[in-house]
Image (tube, rainbow, N blue to C red; front, side, top):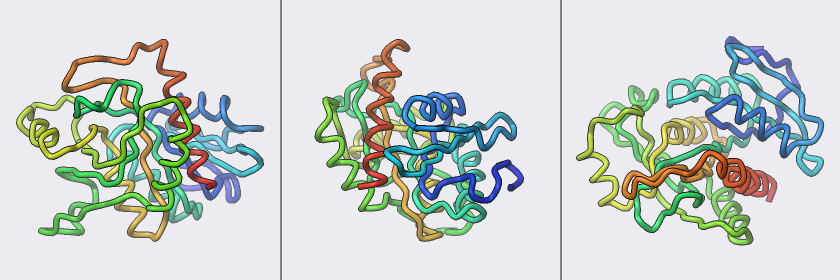
Length: 234
């Protein structure tokens, strides 16, 4: 048990999927895991543990933004011995070739600032995904009827962004999509020698203005979760 995670020793698996929304964690656990049980509800940030094809898996909400994710990822790694952390979440598309409903596998995450920024001082550290997870996810995605893109993403530390010039530069330099957590997750995983990946569903588009209808989100997010699970145990 930690300050933010009320689980007991042995309650959390070595493989953890991390959606931002705790209710998405609940839906994913009930939909994709066998014998899922609630292991954390501190501050309403729900976490569940069950099995997928006989393998232990936990699904723990991370909250929105890098400061919130940093709390949960640190405790999962340092106090519960988690070895593999996969962010499953939504992203805004930033390239015309990236369509709503497509899946982005984030190879690297660009950011303006993360909770780890103070460690690096003047250094522009470039956090990247674990190669074994990334390559396994690409293979898993190839067999599914979903558009898949592998490349860089932008982890923003604000949701209501008032820097259109910055978004223009991200698009100009090939960034596939924007979200709010992966850069810190990758940094922590590299710091502690763990595996991390972000598998993201494009739910809206900054260039075209298209938004994924709410009734289509469950099926689209299901593809993302299955890719993440297959990659974790490839």
